[in-house]
Length: 54
Image 1 (cartoon, rainbow, N blue to C red):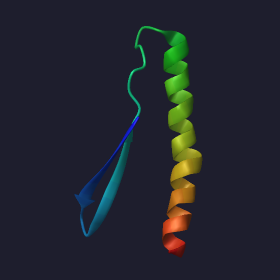
Image 2 (cartoon, helix red, strand yellow; image 1 turned 90 degrees about the horizontal axis):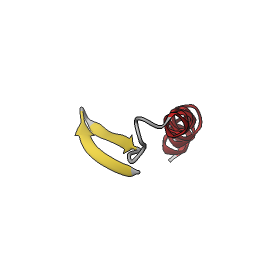
Image 3 (cartoon, helix red, strand yellow; image 1 turned 120 degrees about the vertical axis):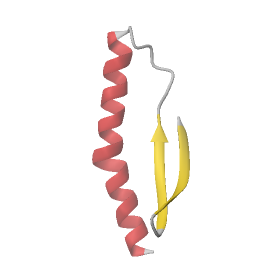
Image 4 (tube, rainbow, N blue to C red; image 1 turned 30 degrees about the horizontal axis):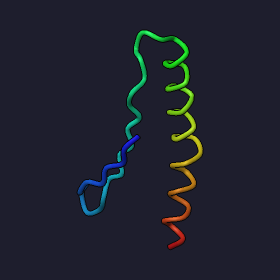
């Protein structure tokens, strides 16, 4: 997993990449899909709340 910060408009974009999953392994692909959903539904939302309160 890697995080990248990059200039975006007048702010900063935060990019997250999971890598190393075998595209031919259905179990690993399902895991990657589940992890991606968790980041979008939980982590990003919470991060936005924390940053808005700062």
